[in-house]
Amino acid sequence: MLIEKTKMSATEIRTTIRTSAASFRWIVCAAMLLVCCVAAQAQFESASVLGYVKDQSGAAVANANVTLTNTATGITHATTSDQEGRYEFSSIPIGPYVVKAQAASFAATQSPSFTLTTDARQRLDLQMKAGQVSETVTVSAMPTLLETETSSRSQVIGTKQIEDLPLNGRS
Image 1 (cartoon, rainbow, N blue to C red):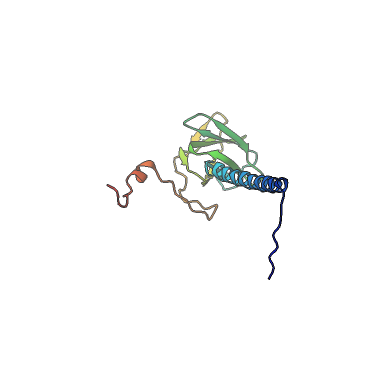
Image 2 (cartoon, rainbow, N blue to C red):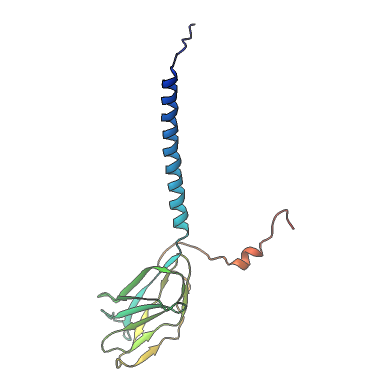
């Protein structure tokens, strides 16, 4: 059996090393980009608020002005209900909020304060009463804590709960 030895010049060896190094750099850059994208996605804390605006008989109130207000910061988001009375606020930062709806020939309606948690889809239906525009009706019922809009399941774990976890092998 004959084994041939390949003779490579110093220039050929340097070129091979440079090519291999360049390929390795591209692989490392692609891996870092992927890690950064995943980390950025994990830091995005948002939720959605959706529901229907209806009158006392259960009929949809179309074109109602619906406002979502963060009670901690005062930042508001506004939308209009569609022909079915449906509204939705998506990609909303987590925190405490109230929803207010106004429509012609109806008294303004405001929800009680509720807290949005990470990745929640909070459903909040509003019922408007016929009345004057200057009249405001405050709804005293709390929104359902059970998410019925999606099958995902999540839980927010607070700092106190993490600190109270027992540590295996440490005192």
